Amino acid sequence: MVSILLSTVMDELGAALATIEGLRVKSYTEQRINPPMATVNLPRVITYDSTYGRGSDDIEIPIVVHAGRFDAESSRNAISQYVDGRGGTSVKEAIEGHVPAAGSYDIAHVMDAQFLISAVAGVDYLTATFRVRLVGKG
Image 1 (cartoon, rainbow, N blue to C red):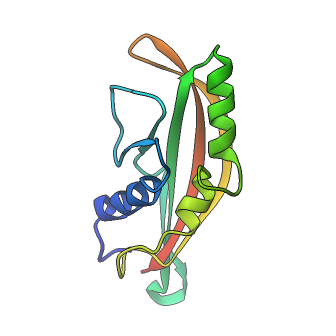
Image 2: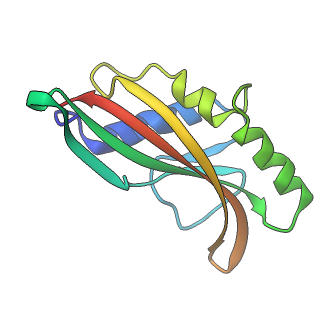
Image 3: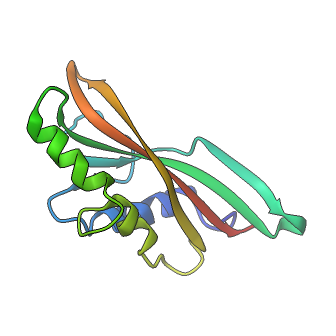
């Protein structure tokens, strides 16, 4: 992944998420949230030289899905669809099934989803943060 810009990798994840009908997607952290909305955030960690001799690098990127107000039943119902392991609204299926532009990354794996209440501009949202591990040529 060294030869590919981080922004390109984030854009590819955004393109994968854009296949989920009705989900607004930003390939960067956004201050204004309009649920349902996903943001692709900067990596938590980049691990260089995961295999010997610059064979591969790993990047762990968080994707946050804002479903709606944390106290609404509709938000709970919406977030349930995005965390499902399969189906047309599954974040996992959209990311792992996406074919990225040549050289962006080789493997994408959604490791887990964590639920949080996130305050943005004074509004508390129900969110799911997905940890996505990408592996690519070093």
